[in-house]
Image (cartoon, rainbow, N blue to C red; front, side, top):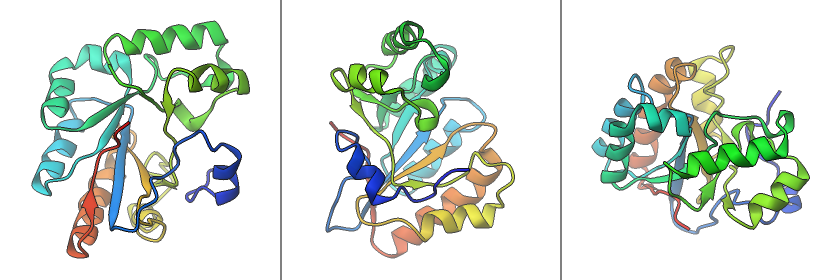
Length: 204
């Protein structure tokens, strides 16, 4: 069970988190979690280049270590990055000391003030610790591309029906998400481009 559109009340309860970047202009912030991996991330980068779009990649440190050239490419092409832990740890199921150590290990290869917790899960004490050190970036639109029971068409509707100016949208450059991502992402980009929207990375 997950929420495609993060309710305003949840956003209000955690005002220090970045849920969206409100704008009166037609701009959307595409984000990609869990990469980089050679099977998916270069394809995403090619598509972004085709549309002259910038995005933000929340990278798993171990994947950066294994695929450093792909990580360097996304930096060279002007995309922003964020820390997504070294081993994709669930904060609810991980001892604090282990969790913080894993984040520091990721920070050795991903030099960014942005952090997104895997699964969006943080314990209150973890949140308090991390808010002093990072800008925690969440989302207001979850594509659901990770959901193997979701059809590509429904995944597309999740995005098109819920994006507002300034929305932060979550995709995954992962093998699990790939079948839906390859269907949805080109259609999302074409839909918004035709309507004059811009795709921008998240700054600090």
